[in-house]
Length: 149
Image 1 (cartoon, rainbow, N blue to C red):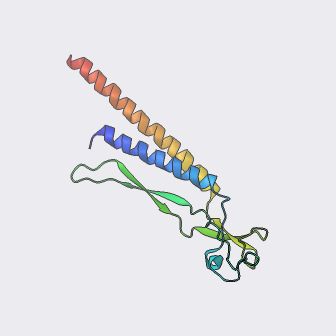
Image 2 (cartoon, helix red, strand yellow):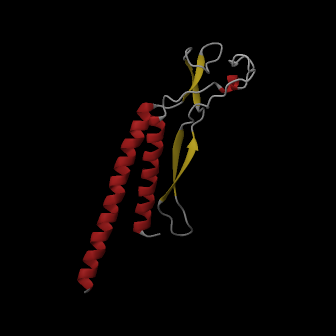
Image 3 (cartoon, one colour):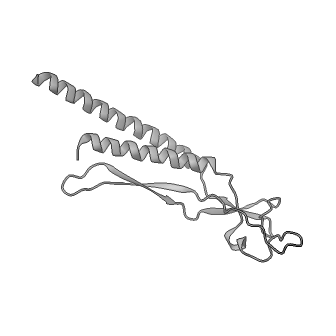
């Protein structure tokens, strides 16, 4: 695997890390009904219709798992995959929410804001480092071509 492809895999992983952290931060307050109470018959029923209203589930936070890439005898680079955080929600008191259960609880995304900002900082420095590798590779290659010409 070339230096260039190793660095670009790092750039892609950093970009994915930024996108996931941004999504988690943007949706930190997107609550929904608790899964145990989502299908219960005691939920609010519209007057006279007999049909229970449906509410979207709480946002499911994501995380990036990054591992070293190995391809035969020339390992290098990284692979980043997205998976869901487990547990994906925590019970939070919000008795005014239309989808709150009988105890006034709703499902809130299990997002740690401090961790998300740490992920953004790590992605920033990873992106910078990989961009510097590409820049150094380009300059070295140019110098080598100047010597041989």
